[in-house]
Amino acid sequence: MMRKVLALVLGCAAVALLSVVLDPVAATAVKPFAQGQGPLFVVAVSNLVALFLASLGGGLVATAVAHHRGPANLLAALAFVAGLGFALSHKQAGGPGWYPFALPVAGALGTFLGGWIREV
Picture 1 (tube, rainbow, N blue to C red):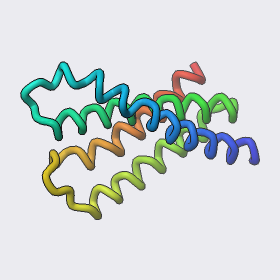
Picture 2: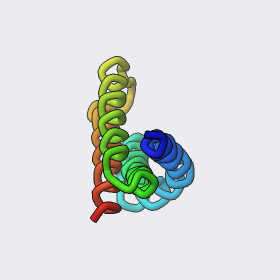
Picture 3: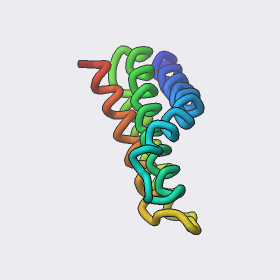
């Protein structure tokens, strides 16, 4: 039981740490491909890419610690439900309307795939 809780906590910590590291890298990498789309589009896409990659790492860490995919799947479900709740409760002014709903999808998909990759 403690291993599962530790896996969940370390998976969350990995997502947070990787997000901090990957956000500026993704912003720099996406910029040449989004010429003419506007700065909000570049920020949205780079955040989605960084979140997906950070979540992938979090799923890998959670599965490695727990030795099975359960905590990564739980982390993916929590990310999706919490993110969707946040997207539904907040209006975003000035940004793409799809962005708040894409965040929980990117986070959940990355975490689930990270757990799956580690287990395979």
